[in-house]
Every structure is written in structure tokens, then in C-alpha cells.
Length: 89
Image 1 (spheres, one colour):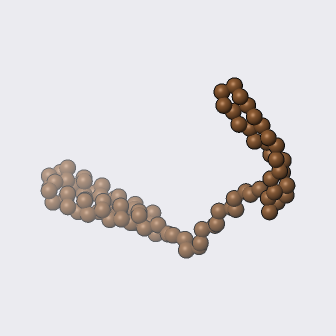
Image 2 (tube, rainbow, N blue to C red; image 1 turned 135 degrees about the horizontal axis):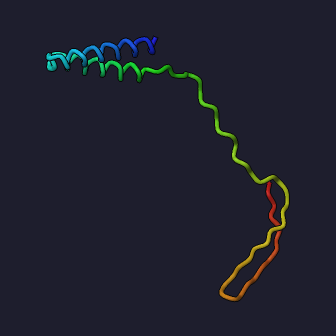
Image 3 (cartoon, rainbow, N blue to C red; image 1 turned 90 degrees about the vertical axis):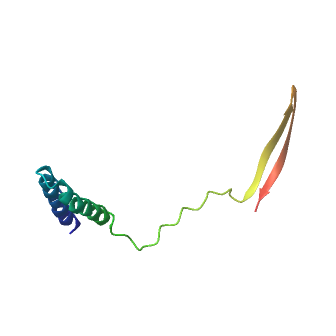
């Protein structure tokens, strides 16, 4: 029903603007503005959805287990590394 209302409203708007060019510009301006406002309001009345949005996927996580990690520290030309175990539960 909304497209029909828009076409009808645009037709009335064009008729009012056509009439305004023939002389009664002040008289036709009020209905033209009113029709334009109604068209804008009607186009904003869209159908909505009442369904809940889908939840986001779970964040990826580190699997459980024991991992070897290497920690490296640097200061200028000095570099030091150590390897250790990381246990994820």
C-alpha cells in the first residue's frame, strides 16, 4: 500500500506545484508542503522485525594443553632469550 500512497502523494504534489506556477502560488504552497511532509512521514514507516538478533560467534580461544614458548628481551645490542612451558587449563 505504501508505493500507491507515494505515487498518489507525488501526483498531488505535482498538481499543487503546477497550479502554483499558474498564479495562486501562496495558496498552493501550503498543501504542497503538507503533502511533502506526509510523504516523508509515510516513507519512514517501514515494517520492522520483532525477532531477536543473532548472537555473535564465540571468540576464538587457546586450546587446553602445554605449550613451549620463547621469551626474548632486547636492550641495544644485548639479546637474551629463555624457553619455558605454558600450561593452559
